[in-house]
Image (cartoon, rainbow, N blue to C red; front, side):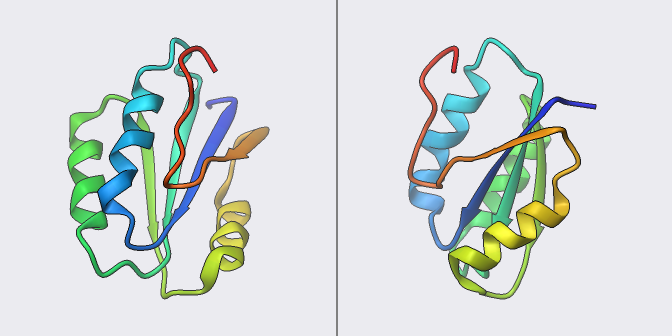
Length: 99
């Protein structure tokens, strides 16, 4: 089991989610999984995430739900996290190297 879950609630943010993904695959420690909470997106978020899952650069878990707003995305993440630690990275943010 990984030590950390990085969770990202997102809604129609496929246009910027890639920057977050790139920052995560560039981390020197891979002791984390990325949990993406798709809060009812109607853009190509699902297709993009499925492509990344196939690439298998990092462990990714994808959860789709009807739109519940930011708090609903956080609540879903907290129910799904199975690691001892978790942190939220917004879909328009990214992590610096060696974070």
